[in-house]
Length: 451
Image (cartoon, rainbow, N blue to C red; front, side, top):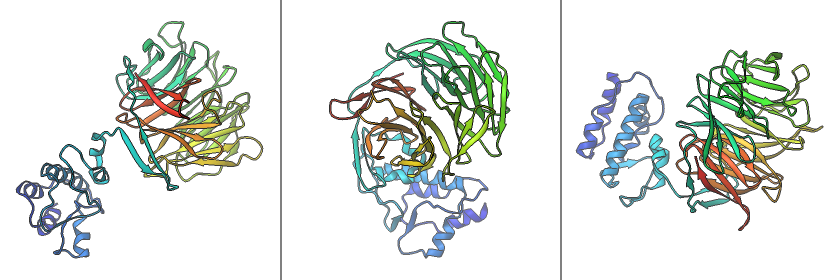
């Protein structure tokens, strides 16, 4: 640690204001090394490339704390750059005190989330410039949860079921903005919800390794419990006839359950198959599965055997969905800065080839769904991402039809079709968003309520 401090004093820039000089002389104590990155401040004429490289060997905690403090104090000086100093990687223009240039975002790290914008403008990977503005007001209903919402699913055309970090499963009437019923029984965060559509029954999975079956018409106690996994349950889907339940976990296993008896009928395990999502193919005995091993698998529930493995992707596959006719499926991936962050359309029939890719998100794509024909005038796919954006894509061409930015919502975690004109989107910071598809000026998506 003495070596790090001596380096900082020997390379201390001249011309720093007194407050910055005080911060410079009090580095934090930490023994971990970052190996790259720096405080971005160097005199223009006094340093060689070798000295700058040596300067970067600060501890990770030192770099984060000092960079944050220096930028905050520098902002208080109205972005006045000290004489003889050069700001590397970031060259902001002089800004008014009430408006901060977005060019600081790459350097400011965690401070980036403190700035909220009503509009955004960025270049897609194909060079197309997108700009979308969210201007219409929306209703704030009573919140369904008191913490982050992990997942939301539609139970019928009026009700949705959601779960989150508050360990509670909530049935909510999104048309009236009222919570219908709250179900408590899990000991940890809810990870997945699977509904028997147009019925009163649904299932929830949790980090407590349990799966529970609930009935809206009965008491708030679970109707059935399914215990068999040794780690967090991260995949949950029910068969089209509602007689079987398939669950997956980070313990590399898939389990097939008899819903009526609650007994496990089949079990399968694949090395490194950390399940991220499960989806049953309509009118078929097949289950589609995504995994952290970057693989998409198609399982035959008759014996729970792998029927097909799709080509391995470059990034973790986070979610999957199957079209209503069962002919196509879509998967999405993790990523950052536009690397990865894509959704992929696959053929589930004989060829099982990749059909199309949807690129335009800049962080992990957490959810992907097929839109009903009644909701979009053409075959379309919707995605939600940790970049706070929901995108609608032309299913056949891969063109982005519309982008909605849910500012201040934090990462978007789940997406579901509510009815023929509405979507539900779960988020880290602002609960569940009710989105409405508007065809008055072409295909548009706007937020109408949050709860």
